[in-house]
Structure formats: C-alpha cells, structure tokens
Length: 180
Length: 107
Image (cartoon, rainbow over all chains, first blue to last red; front, side, top):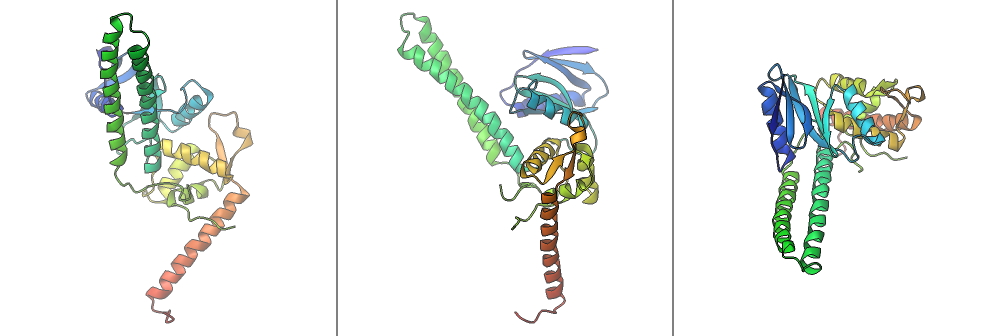
C-alpha cells in the first residue's frame, strides 16, 4: 500500500530526519515528486535513509557510476530531485553514514552551500533588474518585495549550513589523505 | 622518493588491493582487518578509490572495465608507498620498544 504526503523543508538535514522518523513508523519512501512523498507501508524500521547532493546529475555518466557503486555496497537510490539523491539501506546495528571522514563531510556541505549561493545570486540579479530597469508596471514592486523575502531566506539557509560545517564533530577520521 | 605518512584507513585500503578486489570487498576487508575500528562510509570509500587511482597507487583491472563491479589492484608505485610506510612504522615501533625497555642510554 502506498500513502502520499505533502511536505517541504528548508534544510535537507530536517528532511532526512523526517524520512527516518517515517521509516521507523513503517513508512518507507519510494518516490518523490514535487513536494509529494510516496511511502510504501511496511515493516517499521526496515530502512535507513540518507540524502546526498551529487556534483553531477544522477543521470550523467559520473552520476550513474556513483549510484552503481553505491548499489554494489547495498545502498539503493530510491529517487532523485535535481542533483539530490534519496538513498536508503537496510537498517542494521551500524549507523548509516555516507561519509565517515570530516573532509568529505565538509566537501558535501560546501556543495550544498554553493548551490544555494547560486540561487541567491540569481534572485539578487532578478531583484536588481526589477528595481532599476523595468519600473513601468506596479507589479514589479511586489516582485521586488518577494525577491527580498526570498533573498533573506537564502541567506539564512546559507548561514545555517556554514554553521553546520563549523560544528562538525571531531570524528576518528579527520581526513584520509594527510598531504591534501 | 619521500612519502607522507598514511592514515590507517588508506594503509589498510592499499593492503586490501594487494590482490584484485571490488569496492564492497575492500570495505569489508578494512573493517575486518582493523577489528571493526576503521570504518569507511560508501561515499568516503568512493572518494578514496578515486584519489588512489589518481595518484597511481591502484589501478582498475582492465577486464572489469565495463562491469558494474569494478575491481582495483595495487600498482608498483602503490607497493613502493606501502613498503616505505611499513619501514616508517617499523622504525616507530622499534624505537618505542627500545626506549621503553630502557636500552637507549644516549639521551
């Protein structure tokens, strides 16, 4: 049986947490389509979910190579959203972490920060062009207000991710390669 | 050629590729040989293999190039890196033992 739920998140970490809470209750994500999450009803706690932003599109050669590699390690790609991938693995005693070293964790967060930074720049560009160049319609005034709100949300998101990066706990593995 | 010290994860990973092995096998090998002390997440392992191939320390087994389960094996350079690291570790161990036994009186 499939149940569908609407939801949206500012932070992927919250989304991940929610997906794992759902999985613990026996609702396992099988599909994502435009803020709608499709869950298959099954055994509670069967899967653990993790999200990852790839540096390429999941359908590109680099993306499929990575997803194939993950599959070989028992990590299944459930669905994708842009460059984001929803991964899951059968739950066991070990925590499911895609990255075990801090260098890789930081790299991933940097990727997330960069993607929001690009959105923030695009929004800023639209805001500036609406403010200075096309002022004949009143409508643009409202768009500019909307742009301001969106810009502040993006800045808030970026700042939170930067904070997350700083607060990465010292793990057993700081880095794999000392001379890098 | 002077080598940087290796982390335990990379040291064990190189040992894993002494004979041709795929990613899943390497992950299990590292965990077992370190008695579950060293764990590699799948993403971390993927990055490590890519870096090791980039450095020329391991290489793709040509026969598995188009297979979904790619296998990798230690290269000559990689073997040299391992030998150099073993020598360094041996020095550390021998010096430690000598001093802790009180044999060294020249300090």
